[in-house]
Image 1 (tube, rainbow, N blue to C red):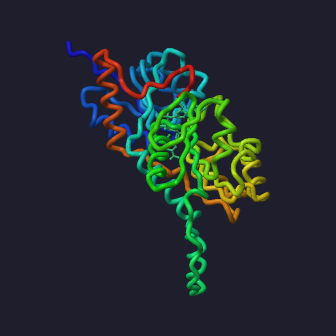
Image 2 (image 1 turned 60 degrees about the vertical axis):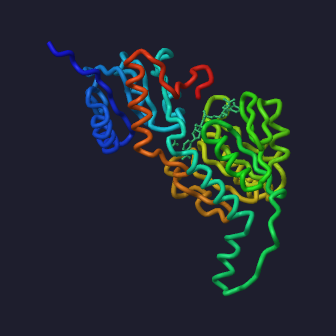
Image 3 (image 1 turned 180 degrees about the vertical axis):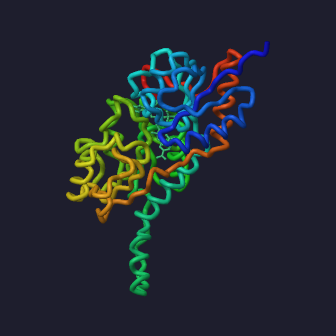
Length: 315
Ligand code: NDP
Ligand code: OXD
């Protein structure tokens, strides 16, 4: 008798997206049975799940899961679910084309603010030929929080342009051309030399709300915040107060506590806030498929797969 194919379920918050990923993954994993998960589907027991921000019901209904593959780099949408059992392995995407996009985003934001490109756009409307003074990179020291797959690439890309760049991580890191700081004990020194703060930390119990009034007060004056990690890192009221007091010159925000950002949120209309809709880096489909299918096949052969999330740290 032919053995039944191993089942893989796909779950996202949007039914049409789930169906789309089911089709893509079934084509890439023809030897498996790939199923679009629906709430209440407890009679179909799968060995693997491919997910983005799944509902808690998923893990309740699927006690036999051996591994969960996240369709993104940040796993906070999985790790916070109470029904995720401690022995279910969680894997995440590593870079998957996102590091380059993150570097473009950050370089665009820094150049726009430091070189005064917005001012030139306003002056163009007035047909005003009016050069601004030359920019010294030394006046724009950049600090990247999180030196992982994405943060280390961003730090190195910005440093290659000549900006003084530092990075802060949990453990000691060594990156050529970057001043590195680590742990709570070195956070203040990192902040004190930073004017442009780029956040690329994972959202964990330790990092939630880290960008608050106390942290912002330790940055250089007229600082710029570029948050491209998660909205949960930020205390919004503190960022708005720091913008109003002038301690923050600008905030460039891609991620928010509530997404989509509610229409009446003060960020939308603040003159010194720049908003993008969680697109700083978008998962490249082909690279996601390649990493996830390779991971599942490695596990099926009893081997280790890359991108395993450490359950003690949550990233
Ligand atoms: P990694 O896991 O590769 O890197 C995380 C980095 O953060 C590591 O350097 C780690 O330190 C550091 N870190 C973790 N916890 C702490 C802490 N408590 N104190 C100091 N440093 C800490 O993550 P990625 O680079 O792949 O991704 C980063 C985040 O970017 C994702 O979690 C996600 O939230 C966000 N993201 C946003 C996207 C967007 O479009 N806006 C797209 C993709 C990702 P150490 O090196 O010592 O382990
Ligand atoms: C991710 C994201 O974590 O897109 O990959 O936010």
